[in-house]
Length: 201
Ligand code: ZN
Image (cartoon, rainbow, N blue to C red; front, side):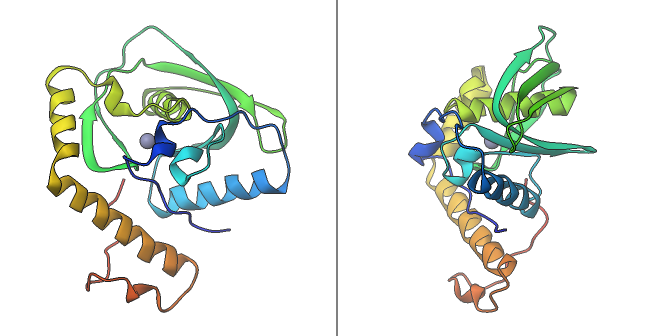
């Protein structure tokens, strides 16, 4: 298993609708295992394959006691709006904005063996299912922002200080990847101080 590098906004793979999985075998099993390891390494609540540069319809999630993966997910949502809460994304480091979502969602799909799976949830879990399914369609949460939040997000992402935040995140994660492989020399990455772990979404 391996920790994969996470693609940052601006990478075209994040804007490409992902393809249905048609082959169930060791490669898919390895992808899912690596995604779980990557998600846990950065303390993420969910991760979609395009975020690790693989344009396939797969996501993983871990929220409280609920965790799993879904291949070729189909999302159903309720109509009741969820109270707006700040949402972040591993591919848009350092930012968070309240995103309009609905409070109930269900995903049905397959597991890595091709067996049917179904997950249903409210609150954070429902939010996660909506967020990750968006990724598989080439959408990001910032696309759903409205009004001032949208303006703020666009301004922040375009600013030069944002690209330095994103660069730093990428660098910190690459150090983390090195240490996860057990390579003692991984901190030859430029930047001096070792990164602090455990505060990233
Ligand atoms: Zn995301």
